[in-house]
Length: 344
Ligand code: SP5
Ligand code: ZN
Image (tube, rainbow, N blue to C red):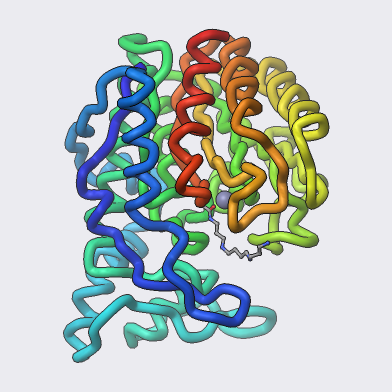
């Protein structure tokens, strides 16, 4: 199996994040990719290749031009104000506040275009996020053209929390959405995004909520208890033309394989019933039992079963990395999904 990885991922290097009332080293850092690359090499799973270059157009099919322009310049503007380090928002436009105007100041714009405090814009964030989207697009081209039955896009930073015009949850550009849209634009009529990250893929859901061309299926921790808190309930089924094309399978804290695997069966059945011509898997590995952000209890061996179950869908499949923060076991868990797929 080919893996697509952009060296520029390492340009996104947040210094710290605020967790449980303390500043701690950022969970989402380049060390995550190092763990996976080492495991891919040990397992001799196949070549690791740089992405192709793409113009901005396929990114602009998903993200608004003003948002993309903001991401590109935000850290330069931060430095121009005499500041150093990573750029953070200040306040958010919740209930009753005006969110229909884009503020003129950088602090206002950082706030307008974000929804949490865990996703700073660093000096290299734009370059890294664009390179991750290019990795996703390269994978989409390979599986969409039939050149490869399956590809692993080792995307970093991740994407599934990013919506058309806001960032958050360590995500800036929605790699899975960009890839799914490019599969449609290259001629497919129905694509499924299967999101197995511990956290609900709020960005992907919101991007495709009114679409009947994309089925979004997500297995995740119940938003009543877990991040992102404000989307991901089972009664969110899609809207307008997209009614019935969104399936959320929230699970209780502490979920282990017996219940998680049953949810995966349901998700896969929905994907088949939808008639998806290709599957984009938002491959979060933060369902692992010792992940620092998660309460789920999957074991390393369970990831083999995930890969094998997805292989049974028998569709062109693009795996894209999302979360996963137990760095020591992250590589093994990723490799197990891919090995399970190849053996399944
Ligand atoms: C891509 C991805 O996995 N993003 C996740 C972003 C999560 N950000 C905040 C998580 C807050 C979790 N609080 C710690 C509780 C641990 N039980
Ligand atoms: Zn996650």
